[in-house]
Image 1 (tube, rainbow, N blue to C red):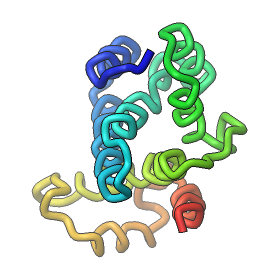
Image 2 (cartoon, one colour):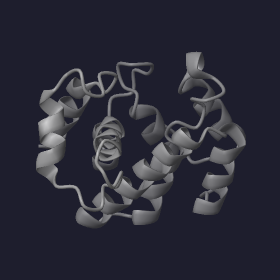
Image 3 (cartoon, rainbow, N blue to C red):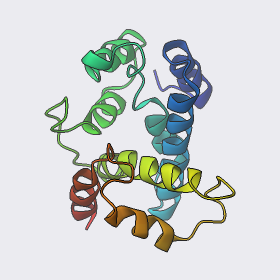
Length: 162
């Protein structure tokens, strides 16, 4: 079965109620859609993968990705969708190395969207719409800022993307 965005969103909301996690999923979805267009790829596919990448995180944080794989298989999602979702947590909780352009992009932007969002939240407008890249770069160098964001993952992903 090739899932629709509506089905993906319904599944996301079935397993996540925390507004912050849902916002993160939507941010990753939007960023994946942006890069799909940038790379002339399938925007819908990339967006859906971004939307469900942390599907199990709220209910099963200790089994992150393991439960996502189970849930997606139970819902008869295509194998390439499952692989892409699992690859975002390479060397964290899966051994699935990002190989496709979509997988490498997801791997890179998952942490990056967290840094961008956190950078926006400390601005007077609390919005990323008026934020410049230099604002995020400045925050990048302050390792105490958004300390849980693993910048090495972003760097490794950016290297994979070339």
